[in-house]
Length: 216
Image (cartoon, rainbow, N blue to C red):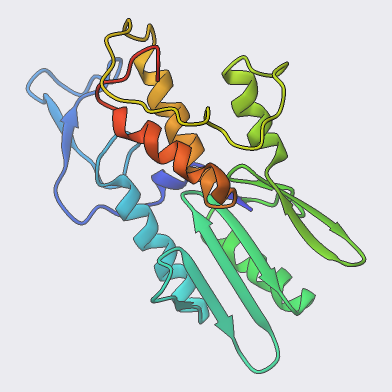
């Protein structure tokens, strides 16, 4: 499920003022206005939204996990529901269809929700189902990285670095797009959680995030 305009649901716990938006005339003497609800662009918005959402879950009976801050569980006799939240996207799993539907209806009374159906793709992970169970795959995420680096036609290798290669501070030319290097290393770090064999190569590359060159 997805929460529409999630950051607009948060309640501000402090006084926040902003300039009068263009086209909104209420008098020459008034230069600023006080916000009563959270607004996109405020640094407090993510915290306010998550607090509002967590409070709605606790009222329903969910328990906030101590080991994973984004995980909530609901257990009442037989029905059991597990919810994982990432900003405004939710994964909801349960062992009782009726209880899960009732919970979704409750969320719809609290927020403007959109039911996206069965989970197919989440944070770079594809989800597939058959009679044997549920499978997770990052093939699309990997292909996106390969396409971004223009290596789609390259031959596969068993190890993502040349043998005995040593990278250090290089005198080669600077990269034209430095942000691209940092973004690529970040995506590879995420991929290394499920592809440990690339961990060493990514670790080496991450040492040059401040002084990266074409060689890297």
